[in-house]
Figure 1 (cartoon, rainbow, N blue to C red):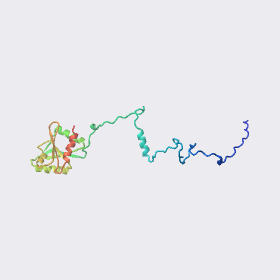
Figure 2 (cartoon, helix red, strand yellow):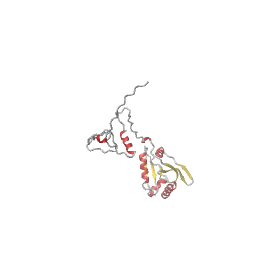
Figure 3 (cartoon, one colour):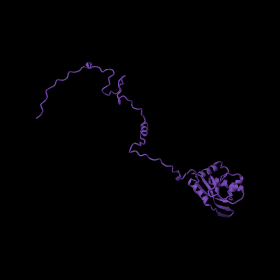
Figure 4 (tube, rainbow, N blue to C red):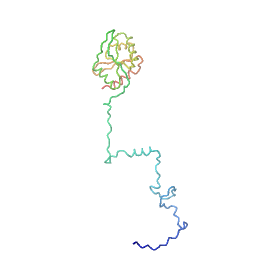
Length: 220
């Protein structure tokens, strides 16, 4: 069993395009027409008539997202991250990496060799500069009162071992006699009142003073 068929309805008469009234010149379109120019004086439809921003490379929208995704204090899900504190005080500064400094390990006089004793203050100088990247190189010192011999010894030690300076806390050591010949040196007073001398080769220039300035900044 089925429903009875509806009686036949007459088909609408065909419409001639010439009989359709033309739209007014300033009428708003009822549908989206792609590629059509905006009629002068027509009402703008938001979303249809607005031009999209000129975003060509991927970098442009990425920068826009970064700009609008900052911390919003009013949002409950946003948590402001505190700034990282400067912890350079607890980080070993490697400002003098690559520097090589010689120190007296033995006194040599003829066939006699004697070890050199170092004070606790000088040991702290060693530790400070070692943490800054300095490599310490042990050398033997000739005990002699001849300033010319001291000058030759400094030049030979610096050139042969590729040193940037020599250090001693003994004013009677062989290196100290080179001062009388005008060799570069810097005397540094330590916290306990003792003194340490930094010696440079004849060609040291301003490098020795720069090394001592760096040490002063590193001193605790």
